[in-house]
Image 1 (cartoon, helix red, strand yellow):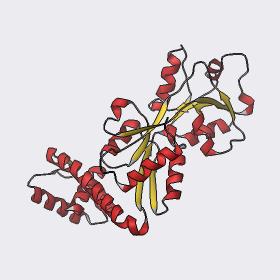
Image 2 (image 1 turned 90 degrees about the vertical axis):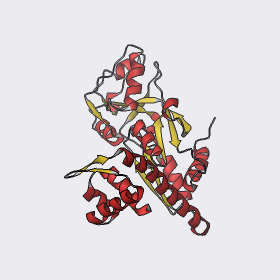
Image 3 (image 1 turned 60 degrees about the horizontal axis):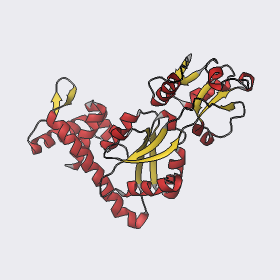
Image 4 (image 1 turned 30 degrees about the vertical axis):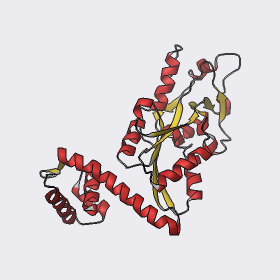
Length: 295
């Protein structure tokens, strides 16, 4: 049955029989037959069928929740059995909001070095709500997000750091001293995060409280893209200072601290909170306290 549950999970994710079969490395008829056997064993229809996949039935959605948990528990069981001989192995899956796509390296680098048999997959351009959803559905082990208490109920949440914003410009585009740094910064040709992203929304909301507004001509969801525009010498950007150390030296980019108003928001790591924790989650839990000591 476990293999059939994996077929159902893949079909739900891919929304297409052929792509789900390819993901599971089986033929499409084999995947379809496996799901039919699962339906026969459970005595309920799981898939709405037509000329193509039309979604899961209500019963199928219920089975899908259990399937994800059972497959995750099976992976955890294999990890525990093999751990005593070879050490921790498997795959750690982490999601991050774009604003944490560089700072996540502090976690993934340390985890990879401490557990050399573990592979790590990072999804670096997700919304906070999508990360939380995937953790609840056992598709991710952890995520770096802008956390609100009501959003992460039932999950473990660790505050990692508070963002502090800086202005990035070329040396020829620096702002002068003695005037409001924010007022001057917002008059420059700006390239900022897309307005649909939480990091940008935090910035806009804080500025609005002080009668200020950012009007970027270019918006994107990538740190690399922002930096590349600034490096041309024609654009400025406003980013959290914590983005920059993991990237390394930026010799042609000037950083200017932006104060008054103080724009800040908190990045937290969230993960499952089910007992017993998998070995992967236990290892991650220990490492968090080493890298980001909690107050």
